[in-house]
Image 1 (tube, rainbow, N blue to C red):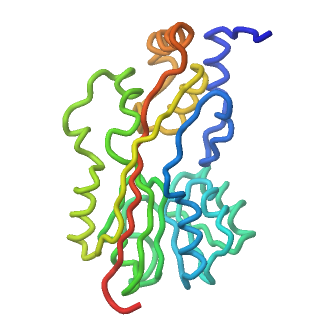
Image 2 (cartoon, rainbow, N blue to C red):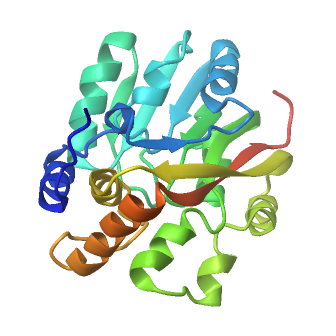
Length: 257
């Protein structure tokens, strides 16, 4: 028989789970998210296998890059958050990838045209001018971006209706224009919306602590009434449903490879 756990127990559990890295295995059985149809890690691995020098920007804990079967002779990753830097270093150094502590904003500490492949999964913001600088002629930027209005149902549950400018952010057409303005040729651009379900309030607490831009400044203490409301809603109606948004973005720096 399933034992019904109290609101207080679930919230305490969600607060206690470590947040470093991008390993989401803790959510198994208590939250789900559809995956994009293009299989980013596999497709990234195909490009890594034929590259000579590759850079993974904002690698997180290095989990995505570590899952690639074959890395190029020069393999570098950057990360800004100290707990993730330590985790990525432990994971990637044995695989021959150098982890560089670097800010999210440009300039990154590499010379012009240093890489023939630049990748990133869920960068906070893609700085296309810097990406163009780092790529060799003929080089490729291959990334999976967070798309527009991602998980807005959950954000608006806590914060109320969002302003129109928030809905305009991360629009694929705007990113295309920014990339082209930086001198890149966009060769592939796709966006999908993907169903997410949260089966208990502990999963919501941990998710909002881990993915900090969904509800900026989230703390349990500041949002306790809404968390209790969400707990009661899940108990009465079933999982809380929201939709993530993902954009596959591939661009090329013009010129002979």
